[in-house]
Image: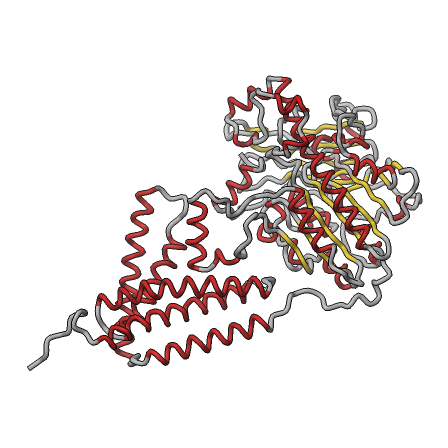
Length: 630
């Protein structure tokens, strides 16, 4: 006669223990495998970060295993049941992690949660059936032994790990000067003291210019942070580097000056303050031996831990509690602190350090100590987070001269903060440089404050294209030289490589002949706006600058709305020497010059539409918050 099945309450304790411990062991094994995958796909993680993630993964896996084990005990069954519950729990949470969109409405989230639970139950049943059919898993010790073996293997891998980067000991470069390369985001040239602004508070920049070389007509080639910095680090125009939009990643096939510096024996480091140039947004930083793009103030766990199953839910819980787990920028003070720590490391090798200050970019949130009395007393409609204002609030600011003046004061204060931190940086770099120091300071693009009807947007006019460029050599002159020839950001890469004794094919030319006072043939410089499927209603345009003349060409396209079609190519020609504000369009009266300048740009610009850009909701929100899209 068949015996009745045992209920969980009457089941032997050893059987229930096997279910519980097998669930725990299987869960820990899954956590270790997940960690191994994370380590394999993130080769730049340090041993400390790997150790932190391992502890986090093990703790989370143990918790999941206990939950699954309790479920297996209550349902009854042995080791097979424990294994099934463990895998079902992991499958359910993984499906929820990837299958329930964070921006979904509450009803859809509920449907997703129930679907995930059902999926987990199905997985548990399938695995339980397979376990019964394929093997007997009665030995808990076997699972524990397997987990220990995985743990030992992972520990060996962690301690045997080496940081990626060059192992060059500096031979052949030890007597070369170091290079400090500083980019200040969204810094208009005419808001710097040495470029003529009387109310500017930029003593560090002014001193560098007074004892170095100031380029009066330097221009950018892109109005976007990511592509512009890619141009500086590759010496290629955006259409040639492949980066024409923010959040595009530089191809591994495109070399940068960082690798060339490393090959020449330089110690290379990058320290950035804005989202568009972070490694995951641009793929620029991994070319450096060391980099810091972590904007969090709380760094108890590495950012990579969010890719762990339990890490994903942990960080989500922090976000729901109001904690900012993924800031889009950080202050110049925080960037400088990271760079100073790296500069303080004793090394016989010269260094190449790229430091990026994001402060003058929207939103304007300068330290209160740098605000003027008028700015502190202001109570009008203007505030620093322009992109978060409604259209009505923005119109109020535009129509109020006092409000626009306040926005300028906030911008000045942000520049003052960047200048203050630049002073700390320069002092530390000079102390660390053993064989002289080159200092190069510039910006990626400017900003508009109402010129040409543009407010906190950028176009191909001088307010956006004209950026400061100051170069100080180790033999700083007693009085600064002002260089009047137009130059471009594409010229920085060959200049810095010549200092390091290296070369790299590109679109630019070294500025060293100008710095030595030698002849420099005229050159045409291009800036371009690309149309994109990901950013609607952006009009493809380009500007070409040759000596004093500048031509802007706008392609036929939709305007700022889908109801405004502009069927004709539009051209604007300006004599910059006599019309710096670009108020007098000479294109109709000088068709011959327009034709010549168009032919100069023919080999450089592209009118093709870029895209589609595969941007997630978080990326789009970040671009909108930073003013790059509407």
